[in-house]
Length: 257
Picture 1 (tube, helix red, strand yellow):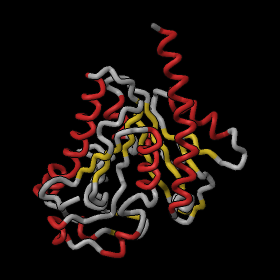
Picture 2 (cartoon, helix red, strand yellow; picture 1 turned 135 degrees about the vertical axis):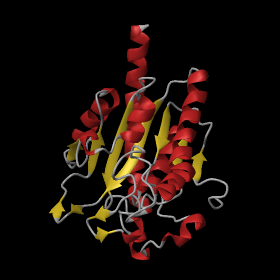
Picture 3 (tube, one colour; picture 1 turned 90 degrees about the vertical axis):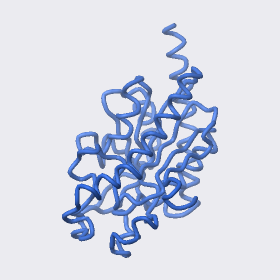
């Protein structure tokens, strides 16, 4: 992928024929060259503040296994968080558990608008375009967003290996939760460690609600997916669950016709 002159938005397997569209809002910790003068602390780029470690590896494997389009921004969320509304206070993070992001303090209106125009808006436009093509082709579509979370947050351990985040539409979430909880080795977070009330469900809600598409956000603890083996293991497990879930949703759709 070239620098931001072209676009920081990546669409892999864009014409995938499977029933899912995979999103990975926090896939990358990259700072495109257009933002090299921002002055971000390089040490922050290796932390979860800059991205969701392991999430892209899981998302890519899912894209392959499910023949699903995968869309992600190749720019760190420390520049702008694509999973936040454009008017959100934390769209561009200043306060973190590791302290203040000085480069984002007192950001000008012009710089905020530049980041929206070059990263946030194109990302959501790419998702819209993908969904529009699929709906025009009458292709069944469900949205799955892949994220990761830290094992410890503000000194408090998090017991869940995986969390399922959902809003009012529980069609896909309930099927996932039921299957995941059948594995007694797992502690499954139900709208944990985050929920829509934490203002983290923006991407899924924005793109699923207008067409009432089944959708879910999956959070995997990042020590579970810190290497390729873990990413592969979780992707394979989730793929089998999602295939069964889509089969159930398809049967439900047919029964309603």
